[in-house]
Each structure stands twice: as C-alpha cells, then as structure tokens.
Length: 317
Image 1: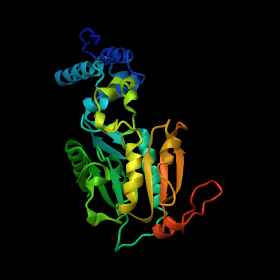
Image 2: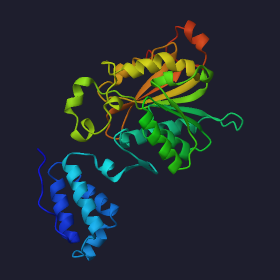
Image 3: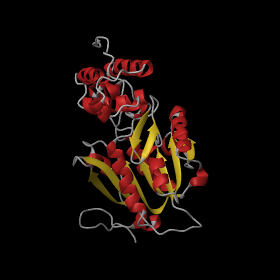
Image 4: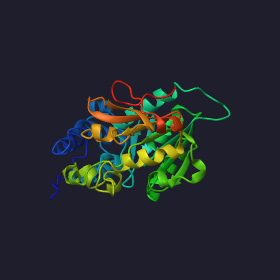
C-alpha cells in the first residue's frame, strides 16, 4: 500500500523539505527529483535559499501535491514532467515508450564516432536505420548532430511512432518512419540501402521482469523491455539473419545489449557474413554494446575460411 503524507506546508522551503523527505523513502535521487519538480513550477535552489518563506501559488501547490502522489505510486518522474533529457534534446516521453537512458547516449556516441570516419557524398547521403525507435531518441540525436544523414526509424508500436513523430516535429528533424516488427517493417525496395544499423531492442529475459524497479516494470511498455519470444537474444538473431539484406556491403551495426549476455549476443553475428564483432563496455565498465561488421564482399565471405588470430573473420577493406 502506498504511504500517504500529511498535507504539504505552503511555503517554499518547508514544501521542499517535505517533498524531499517523502521521496527519500523510495528514491536514491530524492534531492535531484525535488530540484526537477520545483524547477518545473518555476523555482530554483537559489529561490529556496533566498526566499524560504515565499508562498506557493495555488497552481504550484496543486502540481507538487499531485506529482508527489504519483511518485509515491512509483510512476516515473519523467512521465510526471512529460519529458526526458537525451544528449542535447528534450524529448517527450509517456507510457508508450521507454525512457531514454544515459547508456543509450553512449550508443549514439559510438555510432557518431564511426560515421565521422566515413567519406561524404553529397549525391548519396549516408543512410542510417534505427530499429525500435520508441521516443525517437537515437534517430533524432543522430539526425540533429549530423544533419547530412538520411535517418530511418521503425517501431512495432503505432503509439510509440506517434511520440517519435511529435519529437521530430519539436526539433524540426526530417525522419523516415516505418511501422512493423524489426526489419520486417522495411519494404523490398530498401534492400542494400543502409550504411549503419542501430538498435536498442527488447532484451530482458521474462524471468527478470518481476525483479525490475516498479517505475520500469509497472509503467514502461513491457513489449519494449521483453521480447515476445522467450529467447532474450531473439532480436539479435533476427538482425544477424535479416540485416544483410538491407545493409550495404561493409556496413556497420551497433546494438545495446544485456550486460550479462555479452558473449552470447556477440556469438549471434557469425562469420563469414559478419566478419568481425566486438563487445564494448559502458561508463560503469559493464558489457553494454555489440558492434558488428558486415563483410565488404559477401560473395567472398561466403567462400572464405580465413580467420584472424582471435578467430574472427578479417574484413575486406
């Protein structure tokens, strides 16, 4: 049962303390959450210091009271505020999409670092595909930070795509959207079209769902956390099998992964079609990303049995 608090006081410092104390009972970031809530209604930490007895307006008071009630029910703060920061963007989020995480910002950084090594052709822009786009975080970060890209974004959920389209409108970014399950969202006319594939697919094993924090388990879309197939590697096997049809020879693929399934995920991308794979760690030094190289000459790769000293097929340059 959710614990209820007494009626909030009416002055700034007292309200701030009461909300922080209530948040500390279930949040490890109570001070940060309180700051975001008060900034949302127009107060800064400096206001609390210099105007501790300033009364709240009725609108401010009602918002903070309702926000605290929702947080006590373990609704994510991002749903209450309606947005989440992601790199330089402020994205609309709701119950139809995953809340973008800092680790996914690192995934974007890896993709951008690779893209910046590729030659530019004004007549044929680099084409990137983001599968399972959700809020559009990855696709929009790539497009806004590298405007010359042609970015495509797909998702199985119609409601998620509506959120992504809204976010694209908010930042005036032109994306190509497709609805469908994984790479099956793409039509045949897009075969051998993409230079980069990126995805943060569902990868939570079903048996782990119950152990997730209530903010995630009860309020974020389950289909974006757990694949419908009981195999947590389902989407990586799907990408390994289907992506070569849509990627250009020599293309690169980047995936966010379950930190406990690094070697198993890496093993999905086998030579000779996938000529090299690497597992990268995140800022916490946990295995978090897989980078896979598609063979530059698939006909050569199908016949070749040459491997490098680590047992990974060496790419054709």
